[in-house]
Each structure stands twice: as structure tokens, then as C-alpha cells.
Amino acid sequence: MKAQNKLLLIGASLLALPVTIFAQAGGDPTTPPAGVPGPVMKTLDQVEARIPLVDGAPGVTEESNGGFTISQSGSYYMVGDLSVASGNGIDITASHVTLDMNGFTLSRISGSASGSGINIDTDVSGARTDSVHIENGHIFSKYTLSGATLIGEGFAKGITFQGDGLSISRVSVTGCSQIGIELGVFGFTGSTGNLITDCKLNANQVGIFATNANARSIVQNCTVINSIGTAIGVDHVKNSVGVSINSIGIFALTVTDSEGASEGDGKGIDATRLVVNSSGSSSGTGTGIESRMVVGSYGFSVDGKGIEADMVVNSYGRTTNGSDGVDAPASATFQTVSEEP
Image (cartoon, rainbow, N blue to C red; front, side, top):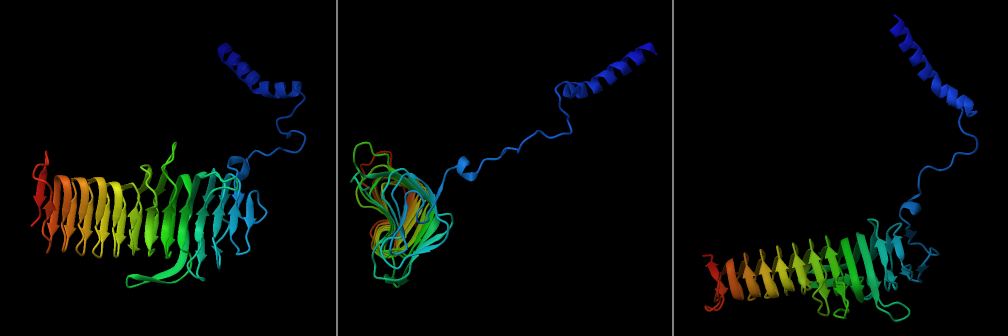
């Protein structure tokens, strides 16, 4: 009994301890602290500072056509759909800019073919524009296919870029009379390259195209269809689809895990160096796959060659009416060629 009494006394003392401490400190556990409570959560700007694409926002100017110019580095976002009747939709003249299209559509459905949905060019000092990222939106121009011709009105180009370090992700481009995405000035010392990922392009004269050589321009996880000219023309193509009506499906240095097709007399895949785990086809006289080396791939042509290469390894070539399913020098070493009947 004495031991039980001691335990009860100790327990009672412990229960009374918090009240004693608050009493000594002059406080009461049931009374809130004096003064106005301070904020306990951060605002969105404190978490990630972003600037709305509206006139008067830092670095943003609204132009007479209803479009906007971004002239300062920063992270910007569209607040709604944007349509212009002429010129460019958005001009970016600063480096280190991120533009989140926020799921909205930038469009032009009138006027003769001119201007770009988004034009990224040199800044006011004449320096090249570097490190620009565009994501999550749609560019729509009202040119539509009539057979193998585009008719209508709207943008000449979806996105045009004169600089280095561009990345574009989750953007669709439709109905441009010249080029869906144009990658311009490349090849200078210190180039960081350009990356186009998870984009969809449809019914543009040319899909994605680099007008100058740059071994670091990459297109991956993209689908480019219904291009009258070249569907994809960059340096490295990965896990993508390029379909041309009259020209080349994919034109590159290297192609991996991709599909290129010409619905006319163009080549399915034309790669200077290497094609791996890919398929290329031509519905006319073009070659299905043409490259220096073809590995683990399939090439088909109706009236041309299925595969034409210096070396063909573990690949299939087929033609319906053409001269060769596979055309490769007999002297090519380590060559394993299979012609599908």
C-alpha cells in the first residue's frame, strides 16, 4: 500500500507540473498570446516568383496588335487565351526567360502568312538570346491542308528562335504556313544546345527544323504529322514520329527508337551517321532508311530501296517494286542483313 501511495503522489506531481510552469511564467495554457497572429503560410510569389503576361507587369509591354513583348529575365505565365490579327503573338528579347502558357492557346486566324506565335530573338543590345524555356500550351494558326497544299490565314511560324539554350516542352503547334518550330543560329563556341520534348505538331509546311547545323539540338518524345515538307530536321531524334506528305519524315545525324515516313517520294529516315531501333518508310521512290549505319531497324519503300547504308546490322529491308530491299556494300564488316520477303 505504501508503494502504491508513493506512485499516486508522483503521478499527481507530474500532472500539476505544466500548470506550475505556466503559472510561474505568468501565462495560461488556455489563453492565446497577445497581439495579431503572424502569417504561417507563404504566398505563391514567395514560393516561386512569377509574373503575369499583362500590360504593365515588370518586363511586359502590350503591343498595338494585342500581342506582348517580354524584355526582362524572369518567369512569366499567360492568364488566358491570346489572339492577334497581325504580326507576332509574343516577342521575347531577353535571356533567362521561362514562359508557362498555362494550358492556354495563342492564335492567329486572319491576315496573310507572316509573323510567329512566339518569336525569340536578339535583345536590344544585339546580344544573342540564351536560356529560354516555353511550356504547356498551344499555338494555333488557321492554315489547313487541302491535299498537299496549305490554304488559309495565320502565322507563318509557330515558334522561331535565334539564340542558344532553348527548351520547349508540352507545346502543340498547328497550321503554320512555313515552319512549326524553327531553331536558328547555332554552332558558336560554348553552345549549350536546344531540347524539344513532348511536343505535337500537325499540318505545318515544315515541322521542327534547324536551319543551321548544331550537334546538340535534340528532339525527343515528339509527334510531327501532316507536314508538307520535312517533318523533323534536327541533329538528334529520339523516341519520336515524323511524317511528311511530300518530303522527308526524319532528317538528322542520329535517330534512335523513332519512326519516319514519307507519304510521297521522299525518304522515311535520312540520317548521316546512325539509325538504331527505328523504322522508315517511303510510299514512292524514296528510300525507307538511308544512313551510314543501320542497327536493329526496318526500312520499306514501294518503288525505292528499303535500306541503303554502309553497314546494316540485324535489320530488315523490303521493297515492293524497287531494286533492293537492302543495299549495302558486300565488304561491310560485321554485317548481318535480312531481307524480308
